[in-house]
Image (cartoon, rainbow, N blue to C red; front, side):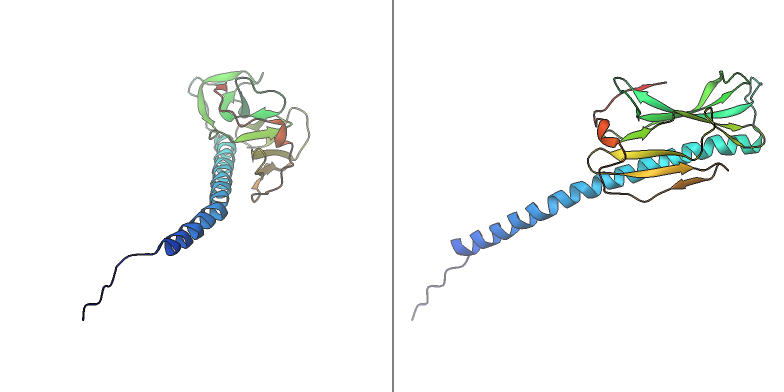
Length: 190
């Protein structure tokens, strides 16, 4: 007796497996994209926080510029080409003299990941040399900057009157005025 056993999958079995795989991709792909955007915003928030700490640490330590005359260290938010309003793409740390004129060279300058943007109503703060005291030109503290992926959420960084830097958690709400900024990649304007 000869038994004819065919090996392989039926068309129905293949269709079911393909349908399940398509369903998984449809459900998981948006989550993966959102996870990546949250990760980028959180990493860039950490970068901005570290940049503020560089200015603060240099001021606390009393480090002077090699060319002399350092009265403070300025942390400035930088716009990208074509950015308007309160949208920023990077930062710069520079020593300044008593008239707030920069003393070259720039100590640190970094841009954000493409698509990530900062929203802030302030553009610069100063840390007084040797004392490390926070100085704001408008006298208002705390200062907050929101690192955003427009339409997906933001991470706030706040600097209080004592100069303490606090980084918040990722907030998935679309607020924080980030919607006024674009995700376009732009070159920094120092």
